[in-house]
Amino acid sequence: MASEKSKVLVIGGTGYIGKFIVEGSAKSGHQTFALVREASLSDSVKAKVVQNFKDLGLWGSSDPPTNTLPPPLATLAQCETRLTSPPRDKVTIYGDGNTKEVFLNKEEDIAAYTMRAIDDPRTLYIKPPKNIVSQNDIVALWESKIGKTLKRTYVSEEQLLKKIPESPHPLDILLALNHAKEDQTYFTIEPSFGVEASQLYPDIKYTSVDEYLSQFV
Image 1 (cartoon, helix red, strand yellow):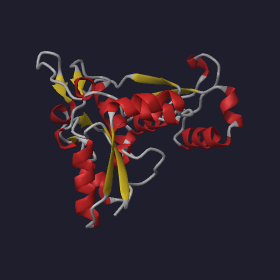
Image 2 (cartoon, rainbow, N blue to C red):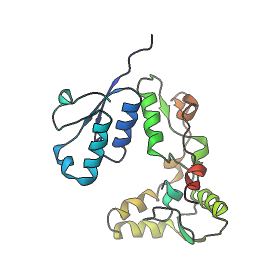
Image 3 (cartoon, rainbow, N blue to C red):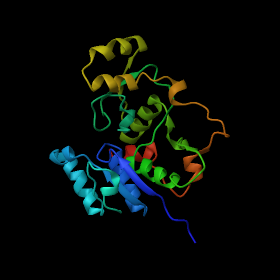
Image 4 (tube, helix red, strand yellow):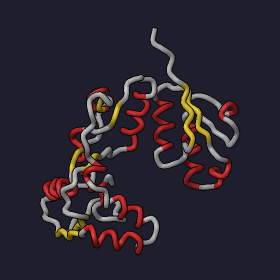
């Protein structure tokens, strides 16, 4: 007999990632609770998220979880900030563009791995092999898809560090993220630490950088 699935409480369920975790949990058959502040109901965007929870058979409140009802870009690495789709004429690259990074492009993929791992005692880390790329790799891939060479502007580390405190929020955060060095974005994880998620759960088909970019062609 299969073991009973865990009950899941998501705090921050109307947040950017939280709403995908809630939906992924409910659809995976977990008894799912979403803790939602009453103030969220007056926010038009979050109210729609809450309505989706209701459609899934969920409800949350600002009360303790015992009062809730069960159950149920990475676009072009955003080398160019403020874009919602990859550029087609020019692109800004921070540093030399060769720093390797690990991308998980769809929030649904994050939710899928989270739900599979929740009842698994093994430790996992997410480092899908098809999604270990640099800014230059992504730009080159995008150029091959649109059949066009983009004009590249490289911003040095010194220029970027000067620009971060001068930029308004949230642009300053986006720029700060682009300052990440390779020892922070792509590093070796010892096998004794855990198992890479795409190897541990090969049946979960994560979205590759190549597949993600194709939707914008």
